[in-house]
Length: 404
Image (cartoon, rainbow, N blue to C red; front, side):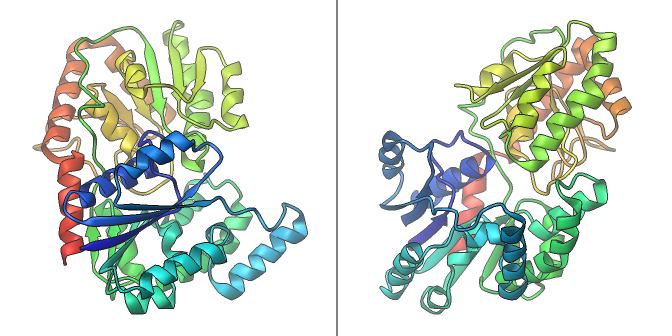
């Protein structure tokens, strides 16, 4: 099968962030049995060497430059974007990636008759699935990752929205948008049952498939030794709203309570592109913001506990799976553990759950004090990852969906 894959995020190397990791590994899985042409966008941090490296993983690669922002940040520009959203039905952040050069190239490829399937690796790519693409390519799959409407609704409910007034205005428009774009596709893909329910409610006329995230077990080898100590780590791209909120919440509301009991405790915030509000957390005692690092696995292996204090966001979290694969005991919120069975009757304990400051402190204290509990969580979680959450297994599921 010839597949046209659309990805506005440049998916190589597969260490930049969750979207890039997922896109690359699904690409790798499809290429094992099919011919893949990838269309992507080069942002400022992408090097010529990385483009050359990505070419080794596809049959054909088309790279476009990052579109220039057409509107500024003035109040009038923001009003204009909202009005366009209201009229056109597509969020400005999605529409801004679309240029005539990219769209014309994709439409020409669709009209060529070469492709039997198109995949959109994240809902942000749906904007390129024009009427031409819909009429010319029979199988059309969107890997949504998570519902944008559901995420904003959740952020408003939990008080974690970056701009509550804006998001309240956007919420009904996002619901309309998600319902409409899903109709373009023959198949919809999400990562958890919770999100499958959310998307099915918005678009009941299309099949919704669950394709979880996975882990490359070679890159996230299980650590050979428990380092002990009182070191915490949180891993993720530090320019996304859920991760920014989690880092600030934990640093300001949880970690000071941990330091009261363990004055030598350290909290490492590890991830690319930390925004100013995350960088500012280094002013707090014991907080270290690393920015991009050569290997997140090294930081996981050196830490006593991995925390995933997310308060918003749908879908299975790569950061949770990768910490478990690396053999690090995990303390996480319901959001951080979404889609995973880690506790309850008949389930081996695989992580500790916490959703309040007090619960985090209690769970972390248990793990700091109890070597056996750390070993139990590490062993049970790694076993679960090996059984159910490798990219090989995930890729096979994705190939089955493409095959129909």
